[in-house]
Length: 87
Image 1 (spheres, rainbow, N blue to C red):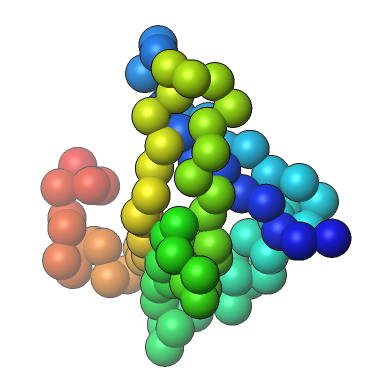
Image 2: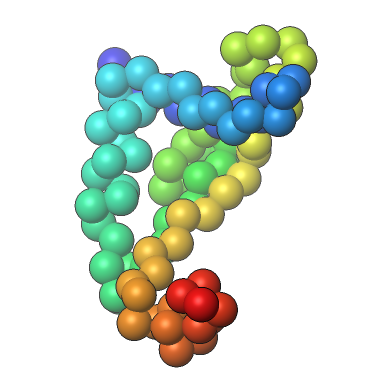
């Protein structure tokens, strides 16, 4: 089964992530790889992306998210570079 991941914003402004079983496994696999040396990955509708997204919306009014990035941010890094997050 091919991974299928669709990320969209619906008419009410709610972010929705639709996944089939293979898409869930792919996303979890990439999340589990994140560490201090491999601190991000990309999600894109383009073939060859680390996590490939689908571009067909579930509802015609949905706005498809075509590009994204997931970043691993240990508290130690953010305390140093973005202390306002902890205020």
